Length: 539
Image (cartoon, rainbow, N blue to C red; front, side):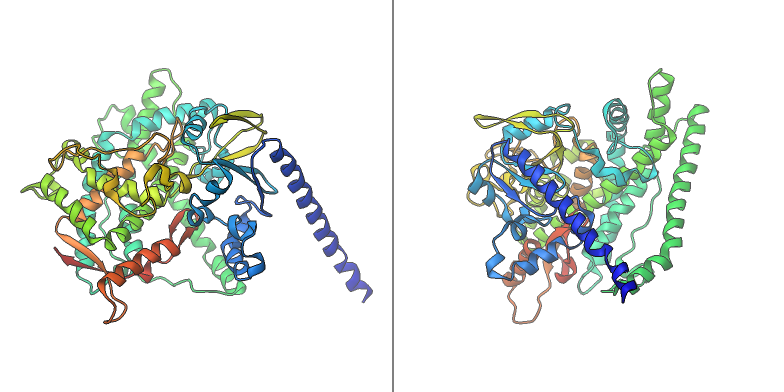
């Protein structure tokens, strides 16, 4: 018994130490937040706590079942995705700016386009907390993790790589893969794997545009069967990780080896003066780095090339796949919008097939397809930007007030609020209506309409300022090409759950699936799109 007490004694001591440390951090951050002079809400855990992020949504939903704690800060603010449910409500209650106090950082929420634009413009005063993206440095330093002169150099080279020659590859590859995917989808009675198939397509586009390797599309049911990961016990999940650890390490080594081989091939070709006509990202990165060195400028190191290629692939794959999935399900629930964009596609195509289009002349004309992308990202922004004050206090004007923000204060532009605030978007701000992006009376001729971007700072689909997304147009080209490939002659509908379900009820069910079953994993996404199977039919 005495031995047991000795062994058990450190446990309550450890709990006490952790609690005291937590309480001290909360009190210190609360004191700092009070100096700002804005409304405060305290939450016990921050979104940067990796352990809390595993359970935050489940805990908040569980606590929300109890009436006496249903409306406290934990159930309202202490889970990733709260802002998608809250939208502008908290800002209407507390004003354009308020702060969430956590044990790690104070997080200032901003719903003011002028203040947000100022934050993005003043990159020195409000840098990105690059430590948020440290995980992306697994293959080497890259543009997501770099700061100062290193970031400027990498940004300069990355900008040269995301060019029209590379976008033309994205355009043609997406059109071809969309045709293959549509052939697969239309051969099935219904499709439950739409999100998985879109991920396959976006990955294949990256293989071609990133490394110059074309991969034929294979539908979800055509892929080699793999063990499905069901709800597992601790022992089973740990066993699965350990059993596949060698495979995971082998895949990392394989990816690294492939990048090394490609890098050496491109470096030798450049040194030999060979003209490589393929404008994939790997070739362009190596070429731009070698050209910079020959001009006496700093180019990317081998490690930085690997790091940036991994970042381009990680960021470009998941963001485009999730936004495309959202767009597809919104379209499935809105047949009138399908007809609307099809009208534009048919007009611009004329008698041509999609592969006969001239990317540079035709792509900018698909304004209605653009509007579908903008409207989808307005309601479900996949990767909101994060800023902070760094190591020194900084002032920020919000409305008629000038706030002094303490060091190490996180700034979060309230995307979900600004993107849906009725004072910017009208009384139907929560409705998915792509036509809101078409400037009224801009043109009576299809293919020549104009996009209305609204007031500057109220739409931040790809961030803003000097550190906006370098792959912005890459993703735009891919999603527009996907819509052109899918909706020229085909339409998509939700599958009815039972014969008595009306078509309208099925479409409303899909809208409810989007609204009630979307959340954060690594990025914002539909959590269970397979619950809304879709069916394709000829128009």
